[in-house]
Image (cartoon, rainbow, N blue to C red):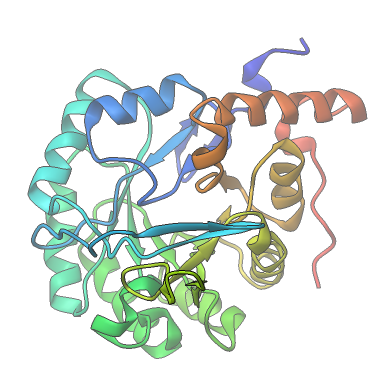
Length: 309
């Protein structure tokens, strides 16, 4: 009973995930074998890289820098483009009944619609609208998620054409995040993903006397962002009725339980892979089971949520 993995199985938008853990967009590569490797090591739902109309090389290196408590990245949405990305998703789903979130990124509604229609023809289970990427803000201006009107327009338009559930990935780098969450829900979003990286932030090498990252600034992730992520998830949970994927700073099982208590239905694990390796998924699953045993919870849905605001 103690190690019965079915106890942490979760239903999400009509699909069954073997564990509550999600690989967020942009953490690993975009190959079907990489998806298989991630699933085999305890991840319940896999998110593709944020795919764009055309391939993107991203920024020149260095694009990752660590600091005490976290890391910065300015990957620049590097991805193989929608056609090649979906080919990898289709190859994976030919052999494995593991839910896949296809993340897409665009700067216009028309491009979001074109991308969504391509996802419709794939074997992806959900489409995630990346409205929140901060490390390309210099190229595209403010994140789309900074405007509740723009978020509502994009979500509403995509819902008109999408054949699969739509997830809105929103940014913490805005004012009035809960109002943006409720706008996304009112526009038809089936779920939210909170949060993307904080920032952008900056690090300076005082010996070389230059910025550490090639792009100068990057999105901040890792343990240092967990309190912000928890607050965002809890405030959204208090206001919306749709499920939330909570991600940001989760490094161990206790972090994951915190995210669930804040109101998340699923828990994203991203930056922790850089330090803990692929085994971090299984370690977190076991930590959750240990916590459940300690407090006598039979299934993961028995873990209590905080009282809403």
